[in-house]
Length: 164
Image (cartoon, rainbow, N blue to C red; front, side, top):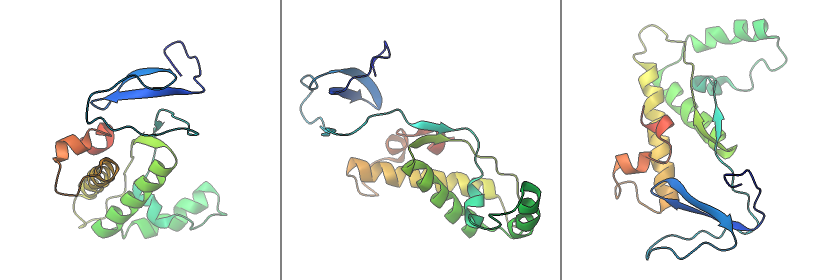
């Protein structure tokens, strides 16, 4: 879709520096040497979705108490969440972010409100998991190894998640 909200059935999207520089019909115009071309024929280009409310740590208990009412669900899971630790929060956050990304979500907020006594800064663990997931995902898409590109550049693909 272009600025006038016209759907383009067979066109191009040109990105420059992480931003959309041009959208139009037909093949992309000539681009600078070394630019990466991606053949998107038969694909749909859409903006990334935004998830405005999530609880990443709850991915660890996904599937539990499925037939419960909201109150029954909370009563069943609060005791489980009371034993969260850094390793569980890290794994749950990475899994939840992967699930969000696979569904087209490019930006998410998180409402982490369970902090078991003595488990340290679980919010920092979650933010770290998001930063690591974003960097490794971006590096893989860009064809870089885990050490060949700076974190700051790799984070730019999803700054709201990775660079809080």
